[in-house]
Length: 95
Image (cartoon, rainbow, N blue to C red; front, side, top):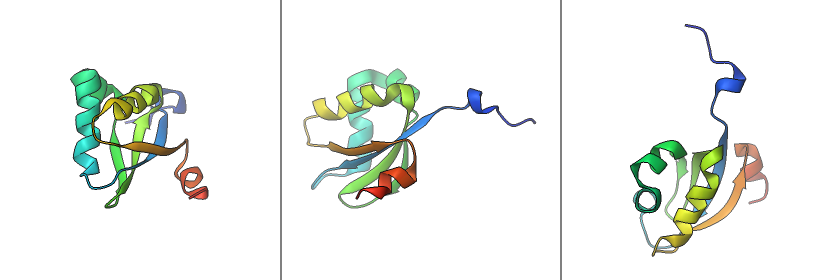
């Protein structure tokens, strides 16, 4: 099987999200699901890269960045987006 051309691959953006006192993994998925439904969750291509007690690094499809940010803002529990970058190295550069 031939590998995909770079133009056919999904372009990802990496987000550092932070919250106090809640389970981030469940809350981020629930926020996107409530705001944009199952279709929006699947289009976002959500993947957790690293997960800590109060913060997480998630990978999101480039076209869905605004939708994911909006869903995190509208969610009743406070989840803030600290930084967005196109590479993991750029995300860690200014911690």
